Amino acid sequence: MTYLSGVGIGGLTLAVVLSKHFSNIEIDIYEAKSVISTIGVEIAIWKRSWQVLQDMCLDEEMKKRGLPPPHKGEAMADALVGADGVHSLTRATMHRELAAQHPSEGYEKYIEPIWSGTHAYRCTVNLPKFKELYPAHQAFSHPKISYSACFYTVETGESTPYDGPWVTDVSPEEVISVYDGWEPDLVQLLECLEKPSRWTIHVVRPIPFYVSGLAVLLGDAAHAMTPHQGVGGSQAIEDAYILGRLLVRPRATLKNLPDVQKIYQKIRLPFAAKAAERSRTNGLIYEFIHLDLPVGPNASAVASSHWEKSLVRPLDGWQREAVILPMQNHDVSHHVS
Ligand SMILES: Cc1cc2nc3c(=O)[nH]c(=O)nc-3n(C[C@H](O)[C@H](O)[C@H](O)COP(=O)(O)OP(=O)(O)OC[C@H]3O[C@@H](n4cnc5c(N)ncnc54)[C@H](O)[C@@H]3O)c2cc1C
Image (cartoon, rainbow, N blue to C red; front, top):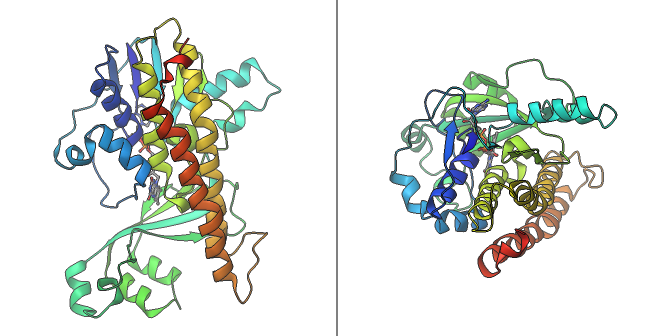
């Protein structure tokens, strides 16, 4: 029996991988919230993660299927998967225990997430109103415009404590005031926003382990990152896919479970850490506060060339090669020994 804590995108993906690949692993899912709901905003899914969803036939299915009700309560299990998000109780418990056992190693710093310095305003736009007011707006003709979140960074905020609520509904006026003086195209869009909320983006410091004993972390629980590369959810999907595919190998048994989990950690930890680091770098570039890319007359051109050359492409190619290809074209069972 495996105990899965949390049914965000990471936990659900793992549950599907295990059932899809005819595993005999019994999995019990626990979720802190009593209902599964959406908040009306979208996230980007990159090609690689979309391939994972396609492999699980979820690309079409996820659009039409209802979700099973999650469990609440206590249970005994052979293993615990903590897919319980940035506030992860699993991560906190794991690192509290490690800190008690190894007081000089500094594990306590991984218990709580830290503030990234950034707020994200998320909202929807009242499209009929927007069309009526601004029928010639470039959002209707320019294929590159997609609207999901606006970021507002406090330059000195990173790693500082944040006392307020992490997610809170705000007035449209608050968002509009933050973007006072911006281009008319943006201001017009903001005039039609609805249900804005302010997310105080917290991240997890790069943790040294995803696995301790029979507990294993995935998704934001392991590596909550800033949203500036739009890959946090994709990383959760890929974690779940790799862990699930390893767990269903015929040679993976309860006896060698710690080794299987460590293989997962070895594959995923450096990737996700790199994605988190690059996402942070992107944020600094977006906000013109990157120390190596100071603001100047051609700051925008330098930033986009840096982003284009150094961030997106290598990550995409590197991860694709190292994660997807081995899983599809190579037999990973030799690792499980
Ligand atoms: C503004 C913003 C924009 C983003 N944009 C993108 C994007 O474009 N692309 C992208 O890929 N990612 C994006 N992300 C990141 C993405 O949303 C997250 O990385 C992803 O949702 C994490 O999924 P998860 O399953 O790990 O965690 P979560 O979605 O947080 O799920 C964890 C679940 O565990 C439950 N839980 C918590 N504690 C317990 C407990 N003790 N017991 C049981 N259940 C528990 C929670 O209720 C929750 O349902 C964005 C994030 C933000 C904030």
